[in-house]
Length: 109
Length: 117
Image (cartoon, rainbow over all chains, first blue to last red; front, side, top):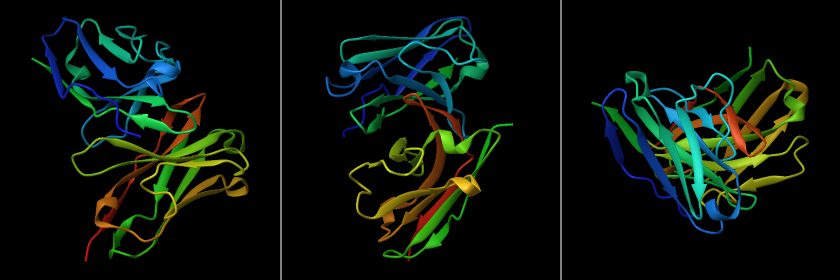
């Protein structure tokens, strides 16, 4: 049950695109299409941004997208906006249990 | 409005116990799995446990297995987390979350637990 590996930080200017990787193993990310992504602003509860690798819940802007290849999932934010500055966490099903990623701080320059 | 409200956090000594509660509203609580997630100060999220609709299936992360117990009262639309043998490293914000189809789609605001002598 080791945490999934994410980069500690990524940054971009407004309007640019950034991608956050989430690397696991064949027992979690690679074994199931049940990767979700959460956004967390300081002092706030996490918010679901992506489910089932690439599904956007109602109300989430379409500049957020998800994908997966092998044991690595990715969250891409296109057209970066100031309000996207936050921490982002991936999460994967791991066979009755779930494991979160280490978290990535997105900075808008 | 769909809402989850946690309560019961506080300061407890190492080795002590605490029971957290999560009150659900705005949805059919008895029809859905529920989960607990925590976040230590300045750290990432850690999934702790989940429970099915009638409480017959529960899953726990190894770090809390045997010390924490999740339960629910569907008549009261409430989820609970009984925490025993608390350690310094259990100091965290504890969130309850609605678990829908392999993801957590609604979160509470969290309740803070501090384990310290």
